[in-house]
Structures are given as C-alpha cells and as structure tokens.
Image (cartoon, rainbow, N blue to C red; front, side, top):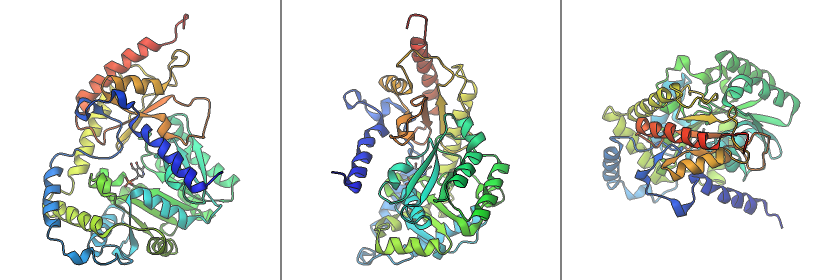
Length: 416
Ligand SMILES: Cc1ncc(COP(=O)(O)O)c(C=O)c1O
C-alpha cells in the first residue's frame, strides 16, 4: 500500500549509497583516495584552528541559550552578520528581519518552494542538478524537471526551454535557478538572464535563486547575476555551511520579501523545526572569529585556488574527449561521454566504478537526475567536484591517466 511520506523517505534512503558511489567491500581509507566526488566544501587549511577556537568559545556559552526556543528571528547576532554579507554582495538592502535561518540551503529550497507554490502547483528546474527531487519529495508540489543532455545544451537552451515550459504549463508558479549550475559549472549568458528576468516580471512567476555558490567567489554587487530579477519575486537561498566550509553545522539562510517571508517564518515557527540555537550560535561565533581575524575569505580563496587548478588541468584536455566543459566558476564540472563510442553496455556508471577501484572518487550521473527520469543518453556523464579535495593537481594527473586507460580498454571496436 502506498504511503507517500514513507515511500519518499524510502526512495531517498535508497539513493544515499550513490552519494558515495562505491561498493563498501572495496572501500579504502579516505586519504588513499583523491576525492572529487564529495559536493561539500571541506579540508580548508587554517579552518581547523578556527573551529577549535570556536569550540573553546562555545564552552562559555550561557546555558540560557539552550533553555529557550529560538525566536521568530532565529539568532539575532548571526542574522545581522549575514544580512550585512548579503547586502554587500548583492546590493539588495537587507536587514536581519529579512532573513530566516534554515537547516542548510536544502531546507531553504523546501521552504522557498512551499511559500511560492500551493499544493498541486508546479516547480520547474533543470537537470542534471543538485538532487532537488529528494528534498522536495515531502511537499505536495508537482516537480517539473527539464533534462539537458550536455552542459553546453544547458547553457545555450536553458532560458528558451524554461520559458516554453512555463508558457505551456500555467500551473507552474516558480522555478529554481542555480548559478553556475551544479553540476555543469557553466554560467548562463547575461542577455539570457535579463530575458528571463523580464519574463518573471511580466508573468508573475517566482524565482528561487539557489545562490549557494556566491560565498565561494569574490563578487561585487554590480556584477551579481541575480540583479536581473525583481526583488519582490525572488527568494534568495544561501548556505552558511558552504561559505564557511562547515557541512556538519547544516546552516543556511533565506532572504525574501513579503508575502514569502511571512509564509516562511510561519512554516519555521509552527511546522518545521528550524535551526537549533546551538548551531546558530556556533555559526555566529565561527563567522565572527573569521571576520575579526581577517580570515573571512579563506574558504573562497581556497575554492578558487582549487578551481583554477581544475580548469588548468581540463584545458589541457589530454584525454581528447570532445565534451569536456571547462567550468566558469563554482566547485563542479561535468565530463560527458557523448562523443565517445564506448563498447556496448559500458557507460559512465562503469567508468565511475573503475575509477573508484583505482583510487579516484567522482560522482555518478545517477545522483544528478531523478531516478524515474529516463531518456536515451542516460549514464553518459560524471561530475567532478573540488569541494573536498585540496590535492587537485596530483589528483587530476592520476584522473587523466586512469580515464585514458579505461576509455582505451573500452572503446568500441569491430569485435565488441
Ligand atoms: C546547488 C546546491 N544547492 C543547494 C545545496 C544545499 O546546500 P546545503 O549543503 O547548505 O544544504 C547544495 C549543496 O551542495 C548545492 O550544491
């Protein structure tokens, strides 16, 4: 018998092993791997020391912090600090009351979607993507994924296909936009963003701006890509855990105007748990220590260092793979095997397994599409992330060598 909530929880759990994309019987200790599979940002030098300082400060936390419920504003100090960051980076006037603290960017997406769409209304987004389908399963929103077979298709066709989808489905009330799109790493063209912004204004559509990557680059508000969208139709989703490389904290925040803000606060206060006071306070201490010691940029500097090395390595394209797309920015890139004639039955999934057995973790395309979505060229891509791997140069050298070997062994010949 179908039980929606149970079924979605089951679906979600059945997907979890794919995050690690390996068979536990051949697992090796983490340091023996180059880990280009993990999406979180971690292993940032100097951060360990700052976290130790934060923990020491946390011991002095007043017990009353635990003895009361978080107010509607979450944590005042943290919200003020984050409001300042948002205003500087986006140019949007932002006060602490404009933010709601969430359980990571994930929760921000769910809350944003629930405030933009009534039960039964639709939400569109591009796939491959972060697994939005998992986080949204518990809602009554109809999900409308739009599939792209290659990063370049995404970059060139996204805006047209999104507008066509919205035009032909009046029940779709909102869409998610993520720049640069995880996993393609490619950014949309400015003129396309402008066109989409005009569409949103004219048709009363809400845009969920998944801006979790903003904390990973140096941005000035003049060039912020979200400026093309009307503030009153925008729900801005951000991740504390990404920008402060602390995935274990599970902290995020949403900036929205009314009526969305009111709805989101209502959900957080009455329906969802919201963040724990301890996480919020830890986040406040961590961010304050980083700011006061002039280390607020260490995460984005490290991500940019890793990204430059990844770009350099991909630019050299020693593999002769037609569809290597050097990412614009962010933490991810896609390698698709569309242009390679692999022997029958051998696909991206086998490549991931083979790389894993030789010491490289990358993400399988299974995690990048909703499981029920089938189209002719599934399992033809892999995602690389520099989020958790500081040793990009050596790791990529090994990656190139192994991938070349795997492809050479499995290329289609007249005999196979
Ligand atoms: C595009 C995108 N959106 C949202 C999230 C979720 O953010 P968080 O880890 O803060 O929940 C991630 C995490 O990797 C992501 O890559």
